[in-house]
Length: 323
Image 1: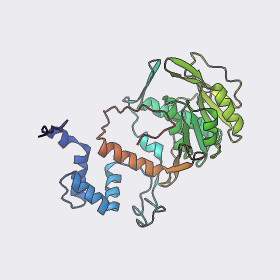
Image 2: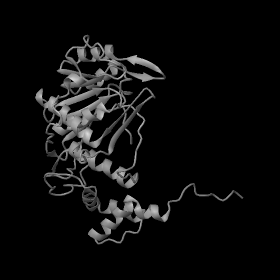
Image 3: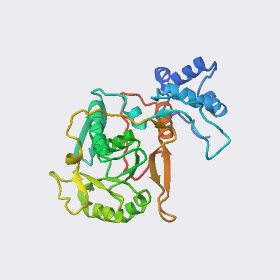
Image 4: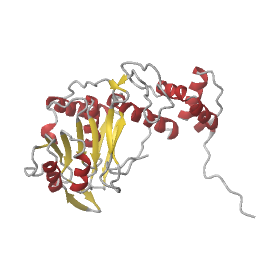
């Protein structure tokens, strides 16, 4: 006979009582006159009452919107093509920047070479300063802004500034060669490229300034290249890159400028992602701001049980999606 299998882990009663999903079940039972007992009941309700589930999570996730939705979804039988939360007006970045206190927002650690931390208050300020510079050069909702950069703190700062305006973000990690970046970004005609001087890998330094030049030369829509200094102690020589400025010279000098958030439809694009390119050129996949927001909140709050004081770790490059 085989040995009796033992559970690797079982949550304590206190853990269960304090879990986000427990509080969500209580919220649903109270507001939808349900008697959900646990995960199986919740799953059954979520797939049988799809509009009710997403309406409940919209409220439970405390989504910020300047205008409420008219209905959750117009036609569940239409796939693809169903219109989710029509009528709603919101901004992706505004929901991610709802806190403005001294709690840490990001901790960056780059292969033991450099580390950096930023609070929510500092993050809001940095985003506002980059957004001001983008607006001053005429970036508006629907424009494309891209990055060729590792996961530095400057990366989400630039992304949040971009999406606060309603512009659309796409990214490639610094490890990709120029041709791979061109195959992706040339399709979407970006106006601004955030880049980096290089990256560390296995205790070696790799400069990508020649790659950045090649990308800019190949994509005529790029009007400005903003270069972050990462592997260089001082500002690197970027004179070979057309239209290039250093991050410190691009970011607005004003401290704490007003940060305004364009209010956009739920379906307004926030990201353009790309397929791997194994069957021809990479194909664009457009993600809606509202869809990314509510689904990520659902996954992090209910599935991951992430709370505000927790720390979540991602080890990946911006070329890939974490699912």
